[in-house]
Image 1 (cartoon, rainbow, N blue to C red):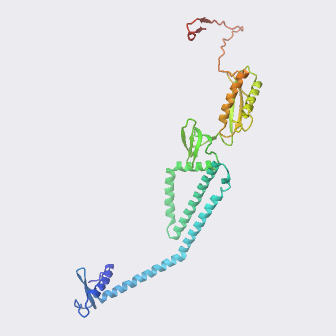
Image 2 (tube, helix red, strand yellow):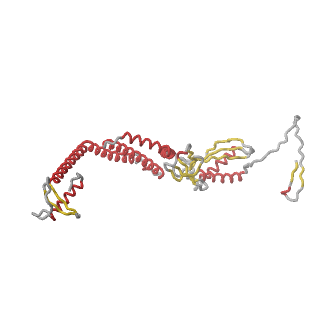
Length: 372
């Protein structure tokens, strides 16, 4: 069998030796010696006759020695790397684990005192901020550790950072609205501008806040409509229930009424409302009379305001208006409605032009006509 120097040669030699141990009869060679070769024996495998000679064994032993040398060189390289870069990689991984534990500890302890508050929504806000800070710290630690490990493995970091920068730029352009929403939502939560249960006016939409996330605020208005407002679209936040609420009254009475008397009646109504068991817990302070605010077309406007618990100002205001209307009716205080005074003017002598009025009888009151 010729020597082709391939791996199939080695397997063939080993198989041939196995065959010889079974098929070769001692003292009875099954093929004659070939000049130039040291005959070792022969056998049959897969329908072919195999002959083993000395030169094949010598080549096999030489090849095995070369393989052993390559393995030794590989082991030396691996051992050297483990003693240098390998130790540094292990050190980096160990420090990464320690840093991750420290990050979790800091993000947890940072808001521990805040979690002791009884306000459930405040605790939710604290938990949200804590999770965001923890996520940012963990992500930064992992990225830095991965870059350091790649450097120890001999990987060029420069091209990877350049490619990551290009990908990040492309993603930033494609998801810039999402990034803007997340950043705006983070600062809304951090600054405690809005809480669940507040009544707010944002992005030309108003209503009760039902949910706050890093991406959007969900509002439900008085009619039951739900508005989803992205945090990136919020430029101005008008919170009408922050810490307390106020209801402003613009009370109009006729010009003939005594303003001081009307103010006293308003104070009496406020005392009556504050003594009501259904509303006294919601009113924080007595009504504040700001005074005569302006002269309208048909009335003088007295402005006042009341301070209540958050989101209670509208209920208190409606009840106050109901009681005030009843008290005005009892005191015969006129709440004017719009009307027009007809003035014919005067001539240079101060005389008014005559006004002729003709009233024609009609068959029905609705048909009454007046000619001027």
